Length: 419
DNA sequence: TCTGGGGTCCTAGGACCC
DNA sequence: TCTGGGGTCCTAGGACCC
Image (cartoon, rainbow, N blue to C red):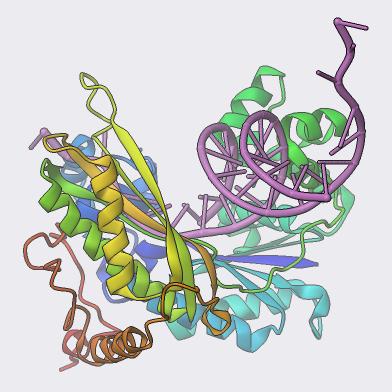
């Protein structure tokens, strides 16, 4: 049996831990630049605020109903995530951290006295007591069914007490007939539309389609999903592995129209991405830089360009990566073209212990040492203490975060004082 | 005026090799 | 006039996830 444990309205719940006055009140959390809604409390959902709602469209509704809103505080959410996951790890040996707020657990490997249900309840109440974060748990024979069980637990909290188990065929069929096809894990907007056109509306309908049709139209992944929904486990827990791509991208607070400005941002993104790369002790051997115009402007033709660069040597040096990123941007940008968003993706990532040396380019050992020193300093004295001269982080163009909560758990100066 | 960011997997088709 | 077959690697693009 598998379980999926998922934190309820995670970002909002993190904010509420230090603001209990916001319990039972509508709360939302906003994206970068306070652009749109990325998390909502149940009360905010009931007001009809959808996921991804642009702030400028919903500001009126939000103010009208006294919805509390926060700028995203990822330092806080990341820290809470680590705390929740470490409690799960104490209870269960076999887990897969699936996202910042979700974890799969292999219950079959678990030595559990009594019922799985009681065990899950105990886990849930411990997490709530130790961290203040409410969670829901779905239990089923496969990961895809555990996802659905989790949605049932969340949808009917009174009846399920936040834990629901699909443990026989009758419950499985009932759950499949209950769930709308677009809410099934692995069915996105595109497939949902295609399936709806064929009169497929529930998870159950989907399992009635032929294997060959699903394989042909939805690849091998679609077929796996069908088996999973039928109770045949195809997806196991996955090992945590190094990232195969590392990207940093941002929308700008306004359109940029000069190479100098865009180049400076790209340099900062490159440095940030290199830092992530070094953190997982890897190097990369190619990168891609992209820029695009404001796609929401209906009266302008969309502009999108990307440039791939193969690096002469594998590296994790901010200096090297930034240098090539700036070369890439020169290839694709022309002066005057307004750019709203840009980013960098590092690819062909490998562990840094197996660096391939290039016949014509020396491995820059001194840069390796320099990066190590910079990382240590920034870790100790705060982000951006040392940075490349080619960009001025945080000062000139700090992103808009007008409603940022304190970093209660990761910054000494922000810690709560109890009088 | 104002619309997020960071990932994964799979497949088709072209380049290239013997 | 007739012009092989089988394989791998790489990349771009499309789908999905949170």
